[in-house]
Amino acid sequence: MIRIVMSGAGNMGRQIMAAAEAADDLELVGALDGLAEDGVIDINGRQIPLRSSLNALAEWSPDVVIDFSNAEWTEQLVPAAVVAGVRPVIGTSGLSDDAITSAEQQVNEAGLGGVLAANFALGAVLMMHLANIAAPLFDSVDIIEQHHDGKVDAPSGTAVATAQSMRAARDTDFSRNTAERHNVDGYDSRGAALGGASLHSVRLPGLVAHQVIIFGGADETLTIRHDSMSRASFIPEILRAVRAAPQLDHLVIGLDRLLGLRTD
Ligand SMILES: NC(=O)c1ccc[n+]([C@@H]2O[C@H](COP(=O)([O-])OP(=O)(O)OC[C@H]3O[C@@H](n4cnc5c(N)ncnc54)[C@H](O)[C@@H]3O)[C@@H](O)[C@H]2O)c1
Image (cartoon, rainbow, N blue to C red):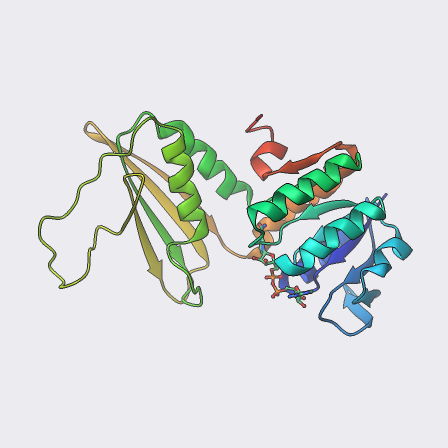
């Protein structure tokens, strides 16, 4: 039995807790949320203790703390977890490079293990892995990312990360068609350029999170597509990370490394 505490009782936290409660090998002992009132939270009909102070971590002394909260809170959670000998599985977005390096140092120096991944969706990570294989072999590529109309940023972080890692997988920028004439004044419909890849953003109600990568070559194209239908797509790999954490002796950064797709 792996005893777990959930850090962050928001949308992701509630779904993760529900999944953990339903798993035979995981025991949810409490929830931490820096912005919540102390009390209980109903998960699948069971009342789980909810606390706002990090002191609860040492009191509950779980094996693993799963963090889907806010970068500010995560930076406080990591040292508290390390002092309490608790292994972190972190999915919170927006951590600075310094915060990630510091978390890695703290966890590794304590001889603990854990996982930190900006994307726990299996298909999204595989999409990027497959794109990196194709990137040195095709000279042209467009990325079309499609998201719900509530998304505030564009292009998506995943599209930017995809373009950056594809560029890193080859020696030169992709060869990119640029329009000689723009038919809508002041707008370049060829999209944003990154390493020679063209990035296009679609924002529409009804969409969730989708990305299409189209490589162009001699008389052929290759299309890699990923569709995320809901937050539930993150759950299986988060649980994989929780189950792996007790066996790890360092902080594994990235789901691709946890899956063995990347060995550096
Ligand atoms: N790695 C992944 O695959 C993945 C997938 C989905 C979401 N996320 C990230 O997980 C995080 C949570 O997502 P969500 O949809 O559950 O968000 P949410 O807003 O529903 O929940 C965030 C929770 O964090 C708490 N919180 C916010 N600011 C805080 C602070 N300053 N101090 C303490 N607690 C604070 C809130 O009380 C809330 O319970 C986000 O960073 C999101 O981008 C990552």
